Length: 109
Image (cartoon, rainbow, N blue to C red; front, top):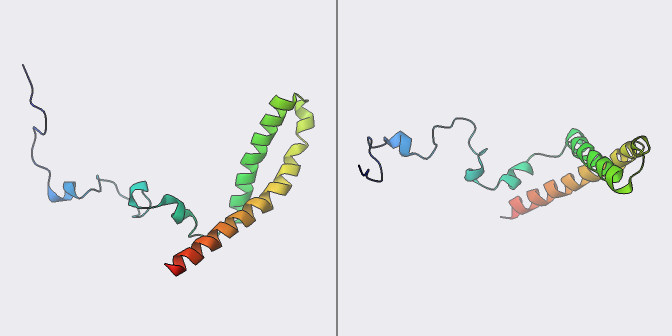
């Protein structure tokens, strides 16, 4: 038996053809609706977000230092507060710079 390709059921209704795919939620949050990166810069940065990013970076630095430098695990624990102290303000002010840059670009065009 040979089956034909294509639709074999009923025709989709206008609501089904709408492209939403039955998804609910806030418009503008999907990747298909626009530039996802620009949505991130519409909100001003927070210190909590900067701390989270720097915590992830500190863990990466800790793992890399432990594996590459082959030092004691406890000796590398001293790196964590140092990396957090340096990376948290760096992440915050970088995010602030990107936010302001995006706002200037949005105001121009």
